[in-house]
Image 1: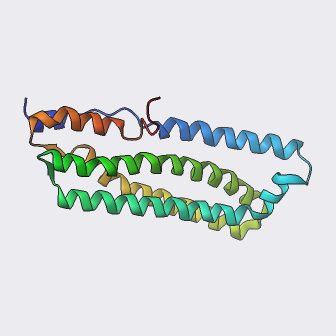
Image 2 (image 1 turned 135 degrees about the horizontal axis):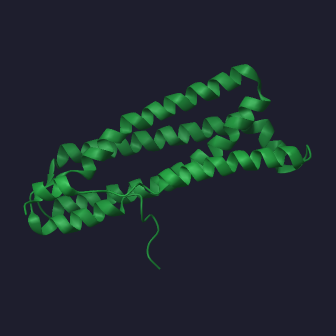
Image 3 (image 1 turned 120 degrees about the vertical axis):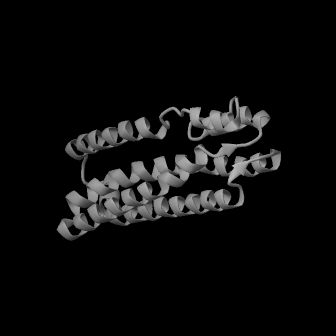
Length: 183
């Protein structure tokens, strides 16, 4: 079986960030409703309400920076290595995959904090900031859609060396599934 045939057969599990993100956002909204109904107007929650718009903007900037950095890395790798031909190509891929795995952890944090502060901004800071929150959230979602094709191209990169295909497939399977080392 050639590397091209294996390339067509690569099947990836749903990235762990997808179900985790959905659960996290639902938990954040439920937690917000609970704390809003039961908390006093003092303490950390009250302080976070005051600065929620600024924190939301910082989270959006963090997500955009990670997306742009990862996209630049992926595109540069695809230009330099259009196919995996030897161990040097594979070695060049490993840090990119590792960086993307760890970036996904930061993205989860930014998404969680951004979701919490987005709802706080919409409810507590008026219509103008609410519209800015909605617009920047949509812009970030569009940026993620722009990034996804590069990630998919790299996940289905051709391997011309049959002996490296298994190792390449293992590296690609780890993508966003094993950000923590095995203990």
